[in-house]
Length: 436
Image 1 (spheres, rainbow, N blue to C red):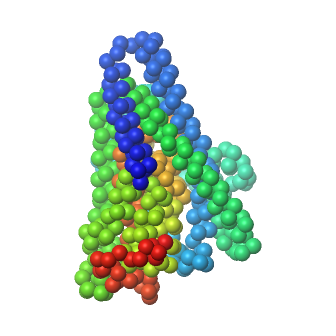
Image 2 (image 1 turned 135 degrees about the vertical axis):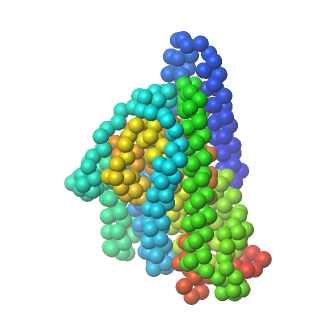
């Protein structure tokens, strides 16, 4: 936990120092040293280098994470039937999460009155492509050449190919175990690379935020603050309304006591997992703590072994909410009109992308570039919000983990023996050896 907390601290320090440095540079007279050497030299180099590293891992992260996520569903040792139900819930919950987030973005408009021309204040030259018609987007999901799709970073096609391979591995069964294990190993390698890239995040964040704030006006700064507040509000709405109603409607009362299960009760029992998820911004790193809290919550060992490893990859409500607000914010800033076709494209792409998002810090930002590309926006646009991503990454990760518990209870309650209600009401922790 100390390492994850240390990364969080470094990111926040980099954020603060970047803001301070940006304002100091605003006070420095324009000239060769300020503009060429510092802003468009050193800061641009490290900021762009970090963005290049991020984009480098996007394609393998999508490809391998989705294959592993699909093949994990029907693992016969982890109750494939339960995994299938959970997957369906994860998919069904992601679309309304993105939709509600986009509604908050359109309604509250965190970009205020910033226009296409105002993007120059962020140090970025807009190069917006025209979004293709929706019918072309749907047709292009299926590639004629999957290798060409990988080489050309055609993200929707890569997502499709990944899912086809995953389902084919499941259909083949035992004979495909070597292929399945190979993809699991490759996914672990890519996640390790992503972890290494994220260790450089404080440097990238400092460079990006310092360069941005050195050229921002007060309206642009207010827009960034507004963006964070809208994301937080959308996350709070999803937690209180969606999760609260899900508990009330689909879980209902505790059979052991006859009392309704409230969000407050849930939060008390899973607080260690939520706190760790918040501090580390990684649902994958939180997994051991999550599994422990699940056993104390009454999850059977079999149920926990399916719900939470699967949720690390497939349940990304918090990430979906962030992407919904971010797309509206960036589109408003760049003057891109999101018509019905674009909104549908965002819903489809963001849903598929979040289902393959790795549970590591910053992965949601990586997947945002996929959604931006799907509607013809430059991936460089993420530079505008990357410096403040950590502020929204921590709560959205906690929401992801919270959703794992909620949806797990919804599936587990009708299943005989999947929830131990006596343990749920017990003040004594489940035996440690049963936690994983």
